[in-house]
Image (tube, rainbow, N blue to C red; front, side):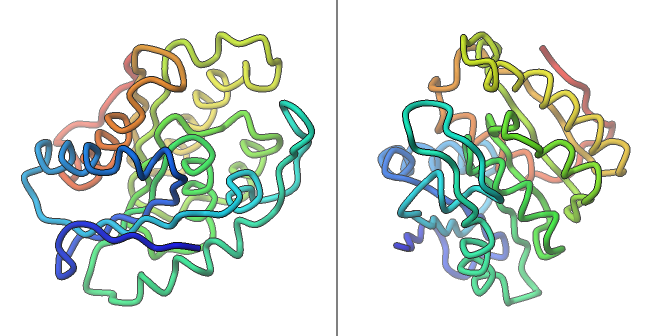
Length: 217
């Protein structure tokens, strides 16, 4: 796993993000957007996984397209991330896009080291995940969820459940007294990924609003 670091190494806020090559191509614009939206210093550690479907999946699941299914490498990936969270005087936020967003939610059920989760367009269609959340509470205090308003409009019957599943996840988190927001963005899954990630991390960095936020669609 290749590790890429950005921002201020001494910052008190540390963002942890599993990435692939597409994420790295737009990392500078994501970081610039976070700086613009927060006005705060931060350190971002990007973990480039070798196999997206294998390294970020909490358990095995069948393929949606072609022959490549989903593995169960999430535990190993989390084990590689946790050594970057050992300074308890710092604030750690974990997040990512698509399957990395799902991984971030799963990781927050395993440990309380993450203050918040930035789940931008997370793959909540993943088989069995909302049932998992019913049995395993998220240990982070804050969670940002988002989805494109066209993401559930797909011919794939599994992926078409993502809108329903993200609504269920939002309700579950509220029931667990996690401060959360669900924001709907214009477009499909592949639109403005860098901006969506930046909005997610910025919401966490800026701290809680005075009033609870509502679902916007």
